[in-house]
Image 1 (cartoon, rainbow, N blue to C red):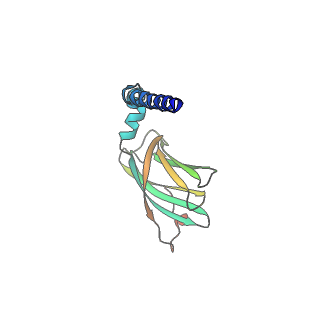
Image 2: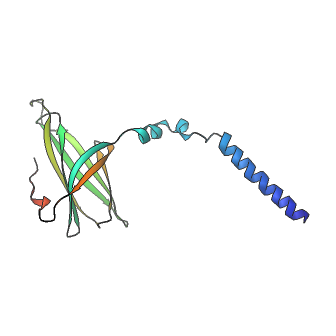
Image 3: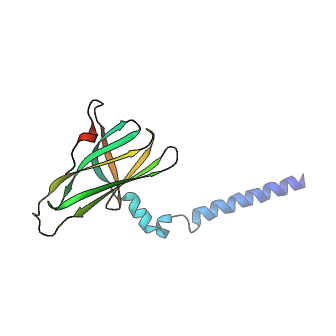
Length: 150
């Protein structure tokens, strides 16, 4: 009986010290330790509207972005990490092809395709910054593969 009381007292003290340590300890506000991570969590994500089609085991995304001049282009690449469901990163980069260009906002189209299951989890980065896709499913009668890229 005394052993039981001692064990319960010890357990209560342990739980109390963990609780007090958590509430008053150095880990109460992790944003102070990791300010960059805290800022990233509250920054709004850039939204990229795209058409999506899944056909014969392949995802195809087509979208358009405003670029600063007619000499700019969009490079699009996908990286598929093997898992189930697959983890896919779409990396979009706005690059320039020359120096003497007409400086006006121009819409440029991009297309990216990759093999993955329908359940694949896709994340997108524009010039290294996490963004989000605003997806519209393309009609099953159309083919995004045939759309020309600027």
